[in-house]
Length: 622
Image 1 (cartoon, rainbow, N blue to C red):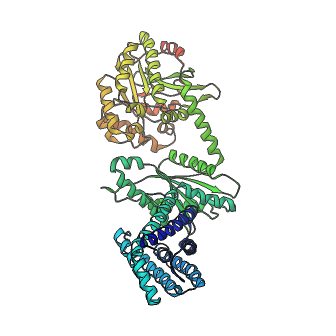
Image 2 (cartoon, one colour):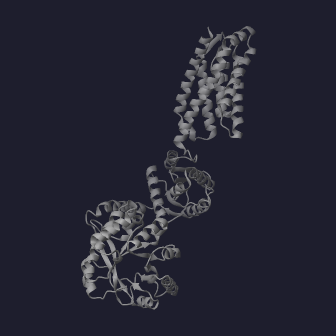
Image 3 (cartoon, rainbow, N blue to C red):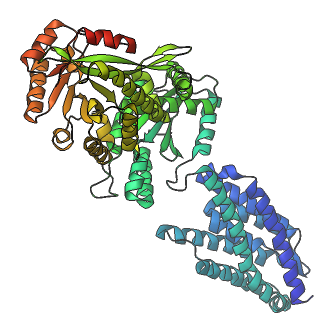
């Protein structure tokens, strides 16, 4: 038999066992999630069975002496699986080789044993240093396995040993390293594929697929458990400011900090871009969950060293308390996301426990969102107008346009319910444009009788972000044939906080175009004095929450007085919202408030009530 024939025979042996290993490894992806000793046990059995297959198709050297891939399999079992894997493989392969017997039995068993021990050494040599197994180090390891395999031929009769070295040394030195590289490659590719299918590549934490499997196990046993969903609310902003690398480092640190706070037997996984799912597989009461969440948030919101200054994050927590009933994993995740959504609505670092009512609320929210998309075409919106009174002359200053929605099925929907939804789904842009058009047309009618009337119109943060907003408003005012000075655009503090630079640019453009500008709901947000000093407002609206308590809280009177005094020092006008009693009105007069509006004077009026109302009052020229 020639060296080529020997090489061909060994290649056939390698091909068969490699195919076996690929099939077994491919059918066992669950090993990725098992504890290390189960993984080593599985590796040991797999390589051991492959070795037994190899011995059923050996290359014959002489009677009782043959060559196969047992040495390679023993070495790879140790180098990839560690000590337990190698021990099992040695026992299976060595035991089977011993049972065959023959003159080559003793050197064969010794070669299997030493290959396994060398594999274990290689396994542990690399781990303490944290280095990858390079091609060079694996090549050296492979050659050593081949050399020691040939060296054990000294235990054979001399003529057989010489025959083996002469005809098989070359194929062994070539093929054994190739075999080790080949087997390791296929296993590592499969292991990596299985790992990537179950674990997040950035944080190394379980992904949605892996966490879903863990949740199914909990549901299958009906064990009471708690599931929490952490959402990093400002992750996109961090990504835009600091880039992908810093964002990934931050996500890794967030995962590490959550893991450090997990009780024993709990799990955390990253299931989407900014979501971390936590499983606490024990019965927990609400007090425990709130306290654990508080401690976790205290750690998580501390600065991250990805930027200068340190990066801070805000989170929201949704909680689902599983009581042991039958339910689908997808339904739990949907419901925990519902709770998380409502936590986000409440502000940063809030926690909400899922209740069935939240789903009903979300369905109602979704229905309103869908209805809003066609409400304009169905003519379901209308405007009402609340008079504003000039306290200096006791006459009408103008009106504030108030949007109302008469849903075709649900009836009247309050603005504080549908306006945020319109801002979410983008409908606030066409709705806001319609409001301005309608208010301008109404004011055009009023100006015929009352040339000094002011029309106050609320604008949203989303409208301010539109590049063509100023141009659009100017065109609508011109189309109505009225002066921009008759329009007062009201902006809330929240609109400024969301994007102060963009808002400042738009406000200055509107001021230059001739519009009046008012800061609405003053005192309910950050109330930064820099807004009053640097932005082109001419009027400040004091929120009705201050006015309601004027009659019985001295602190509110003092605070309102201070606001009015400060605003007047800045040469700005003041209007107080929500005046409902004569006592409130008298206090505001003593505080030298300029203008007021509220139910004390009139509820919001429909358009055909405006002219009769105006005819009974004198307009201010303020």
